Image (cartoon, rainbow, N blue to C red; front, side, top):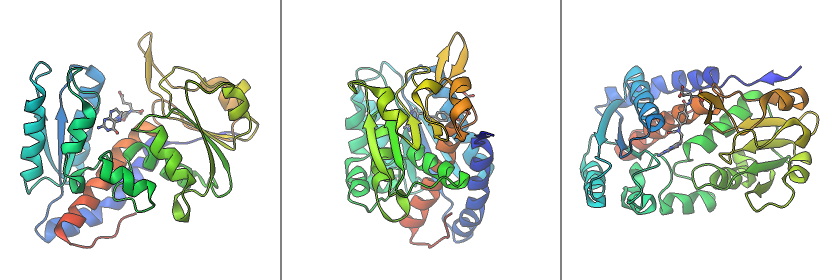
Length: 291
Ligand SMILES: Nc1nc2c(c(=O)[nH]1)N[C@@H](CN(C=O)c1ccc(C(=O)N[C@@H](CCC(=O)O)C(=O)O)cc1)CN2
């Protein structure tokens, strides 16, 4: 029987487990605060940002939001980031990706105070993660780790194949899964658009994470019996949400699989709250228990 991994339920567990820390920080005079910045007309991005604001409100995290006109010069976005860096009530800053075409997202990220970089995208934080001393684990990779942990999937010694090498998901996740201690200890293969025989790689995997942004790229014929499948993809095809995994055929062979929607997406948001609380604790010097 294939286990369908319920991302909404695990995300709810994470949120509930953060309540105590938020209360401790708030009672001590430091209510955690998250600022979201949107410079895009993409409807999905606007939806994700408003979901993140709502998540904050529900948990008692202060939420700040800035919209920068898509036609504004890059400097306007840089100034917004500077203002938020200087705002003491803001513990975490998230600039929703993608931004307007004429703005270099990497430059925006470099301007975020690394101590407030709750996405974990700043070069200093990427370096720390790769060196084994992560300040903030990026939200989606961290969410995938939590889903595996919650499902009881053993990563230690497992063959994990990550499909997709984006800075937001594939590359940091491959790093985390390969690291020792409590991060994974897996043998990781990072596949991408130039991988010659993708099916040969995915077939030998105990864990497959699809994060390529290509609808239904991975199907059941490319998987081995008993594999765990995590689908990070979220594509709109004919108005329908479709993952990077062909769900029905993959479910036939998998022992556990995440659905789309209701799999990784809610975890991305939950781990953002986690990083915001962590940032608040680090910035205030108030120790809290984090799950
Ligand atoms: N600065 C960042 N930008 C982006 C990130 C990120 O981590 N940081 N990730 C992606 C997508 N993303 C976050 O913003 C995201 C994707 C999906 C969901 C989600 O909750 N999905 C739900 C369905 C939502 C719906 O109904 O439309 C699900 O899968 O069940 C949240 C966040 C892009 N940019």
